[in-house]
Image (cartoon, rainbow, N blue to C red; front, top):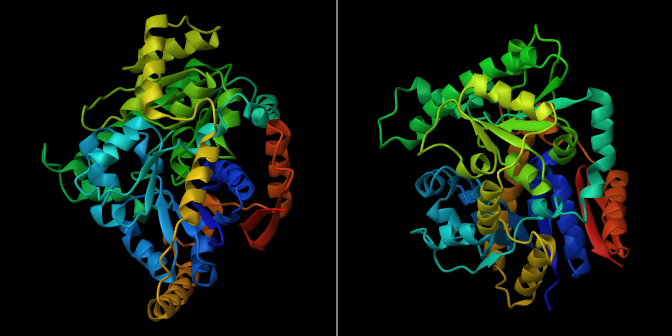
Length: 454
């Protein structure tokens, strides 16, 4: 049997790390040696890491060269897609999030649900790689069995902020942490979109209009609800100073991006958004959400989160709805709720029964035990040299202003985890699920950990 090695990189700590650590525990129980942690730290050392199944989360074109390098080093890439749950339309998703060259490099694909699997099968670049409908480990954390993980943190947030409204924003491509990386802003500066042809600039124009409405809405809502705190939680890659600027004179607004979003959803009275995947998580937790849609577009609105929320189309209606929710909640429409339950069932697997992490671990174990091609030495050695050279470039870019590898930005995206943090989290998972007693962890590098089972 091949040694079972699994590498799980994490780009955004607050959004991904808890779920991927849970998946690592299940995989360790299935006999894997799991390397999990900061994506950038793993990438810098990929040339020296053992041959593995490399679990990636994206199918965009920019991953093509990295996947080719992994192949030459002897790794096998298995892909899910974090973006395959929430999208505007099939055309928009396939245009922006999937490239045939990258798609064809995956040995297997892990789908959120049946709708995701259908989407991939219909893609013109699909080459027959097996698709497994497993669900996503992030959904595991929302199930009743694991919800107690977040209760103490939710209680602490309510103690700290009092009763609050949570506003999640997703304007990172328009309002990036580094302004020079704001791709949608640059697209708009290059000229107006051509209707029906230019999907990229059309999306940018739609997001820009929504962005302006949100900048207006936040202080207006705060003034309309003076007895509540309004917490703005920007996307991890967003520039927070913009939100500070527009709310500077409104004392009950706080702009924060701290920790996993789940305790924030539990602690808040209601969450506001437009097309934010967090609304799907809130729905699965049974927490109320409102989608603010002052402008709409069949081509560019992210449909699933909006359809799982109460929808408001103007500021006055939004304020009335929020006030009603804060006054004790508004009655639900049973018919609408039934439609939403049917809809979420098409998109999200593993809400009951086996956890998504269990299903993923079973799939990966089957792949790891199958005969595997070993890259010849003549390919591996040059690939190792290239990987080491790329690592040197990434280390140099840590000091380049505006680089995605800039050390300040990386600390923002992955502030850091200690071995004590990891061990405490494993113990919490195990205590709730009655398992993982044999799973142990050690620190390989800063923010990179190895899990195995004794």
